Image (tube, rainbow, N blue to C red; front, side, top):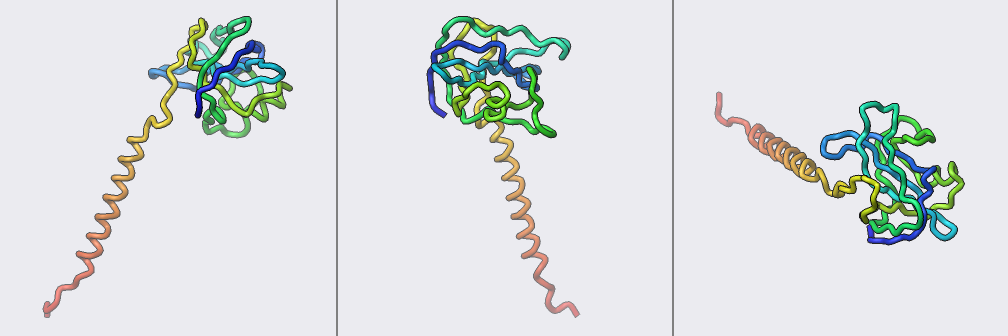
Amino acid sequence: MKHVAARGRFVDERTVYLDNKLRRGRAGYEVVTPLRLDGTHVLVNRGWVQAGKSREALPEVPAPSGEVRIEGLALARIAHVLEPGTSAPGKVRLNIDLESFERETALRLQPIVIEQHSPTPDGLLREWPRPDVGVEKHASYALQWYSLAGLAVVLVVVLSFRRVGAT
């Protein structure tokens, strides 16, 4: 990951909503919009918006018009979630793959995604989860399994001695 900046115009009609994204215990969408550069495009993960009361109507999150300057982190891809089958094209998806999105939209895409950190007046929340969130859970699992392995070794040693002289 490295910090990048890009200047261009958003292609709002190609905006995609990534479903089932939680922030502060609430369900919502991450909003991903292509940014037109000089002859090419880059996907920008603009931020999170809370889902409405019904899944039938998507929240209104228009991209800023005109030329904008976006700053953020360059990522190799957007984190994927487990999905049965392949992602169907449409406005709402679980995942977005750069190659298939490029084929679907006929936009020439840069091989990165920008996770936007710069402010824009669109009302999106840009509190990105840290990559190491939840690592404590894995450390406690490791401690648990090493403790069980240690207990197994102790039991094998203790139970392997036979009483001598019991006649």
